[in-house]
Image (cartoon, rainbow, N blue to C red):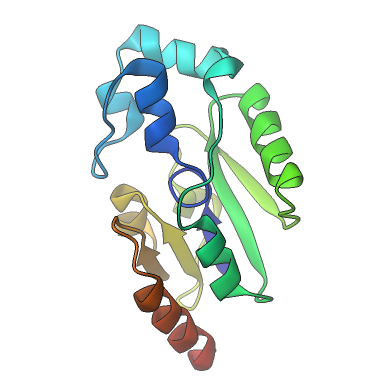
Length: 157
């Protein structure tokens, strides 16, 4: 099974945070580490902040994965945000199982990965906690490296 993170892999979460709060979100930081308590409450409550834009490499990732089954895993800051994320997936034609994980919870505590299960994520904290295979999305994204990795992963299954 392949699990794909939504924020930072399919949608540009860092750009959204920059647009909303004027702050950069480094790849090695959690959003709670850079926002004030007031800003974090605003992120949780203000749906207008959640303007999703596709990352430059989202379509490449989906094209390379092709017809291999996958599941979206994504952190949510409340049910209103889960609803907005579900709508974004729907309007972008991504009809796959989706697991929404409460903020502050690691993916590996909800999904107990087997050694062969793959997580595609941009968050190093999630990658370090994952107990299966992983692909760490970094920028600049290398389509060739990702394609080679996925081909190797599929061949090993």
